[in-house]
Length: 396
Image (tube, one colour):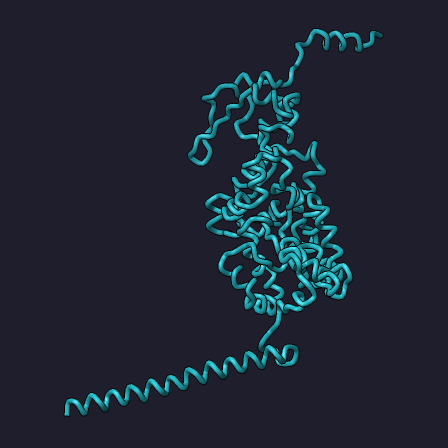
């Protein structure tokens, strides 16, 4: 009995081959700039620039690697295709994104949220090292700004809108990035993350109060190490909710350069957020009054206490330790001696217990001034009465 197998093999050899759709086949149609479809009454272009695609990071992939439902299609396909999913290759990244504030169901906003193409592009995706890429350092603020500077977000959620972008551009990070072109400057994802982005109120967020110092230390490690050993850093490590963080003094998106006049004349105001009483007494001194007039050369809080390495008075390394005061004051007042450093920068003339001499001098001056005004007030009133009497006599 003959075996059917040879006939089956012969049939396979003589049958015409079946070819799946290739990228070249796709560009036969999609290279046409006039190719469009209508969605919601508006025309949507289906044109894809072949040169742009082939030079993209996915240029070595076939169209069907992403549009997998077309893998067995031989000719023209249906107009409506399934949405592509990047998770087939980037499952770990999608897992991070699904937990982020940008994923549906997690956001505090009520409009379309950004997906992979909104940040990376579609057929023109480039490596983050490519200066043309949407996620290249210089381009990230503009990429994020497409949503965060939009009229929709700005009108409905101002704290997430255009102010964020404009404040960043006016701050030192934006100035260094845009005006100097230094790509080491911090941009959005350096502080907020790339895919694992959370609300600042979320403890998982790199911009959360509990983690902001660590985030800043990725660029400013030396400064943060000094802060850690300061009185502020120790209070923060102990869990104090009142202890300042980097953002407490420097702000968030608009971060002024610490040596600019605009920052220097506002240092006292920044410190007064926690040290209201000390700020008020400082403002009564010469230093405080000329600072209030916009003179940035006068001594302010950091000049006496330090900027990041602030230590309590009892610490031998503190700038305001009695053994160090001559050097501290001498930085602005050469030749400062033991009498000079007896100056009381935070003396409160209302505090009778701690500053009795100053209190009684203040009280005496108040009594003297009040007495003078009362005496001359009475004198002036009597003079006016006499003048009226004399005037009447002349008329009589």
